[in-house]
Length: 158
Image (cartoon, rainbow, N blue to C red; front, side, top):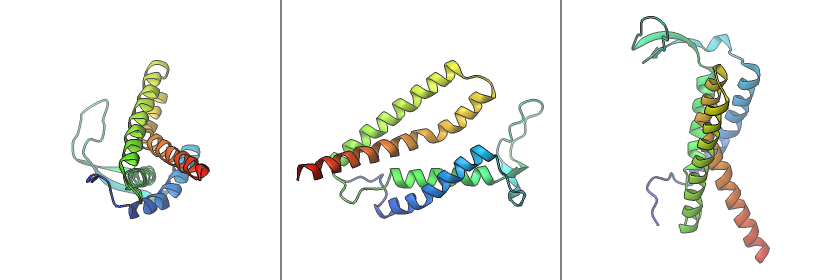
């Protein structure tokens, strides 16, 4: 079975190597809100987000890149881990991959629905930021858990 949308399996290891430091960096940023001054730069912004007042498009703004670097690394790592082929990719793995992705989307949107009902104000904005990462994270956790559980049951049968 040919999976044209999946990356070669060698990218999975690179994804795991990026995943753990970026995950730890993300947790650290959540806890400490650390932004080193040497990462303060001017960047092009398509929509700088002027909520009140005149709206601008395509302007230079001053930002700290710490959160951007952490988020980009985490998303790249999750994409590499989640969408790289297994060494023995077959129809069963493809079925597990699809069911894990569907399960992750269902759980993510259930959590988002609960957030819409019970969380308001700036706390909701924070939940929406975390929500960007949860589909990939839930997918990776569930997919690898099912693979682990399946490998363990096969080894127990031998």
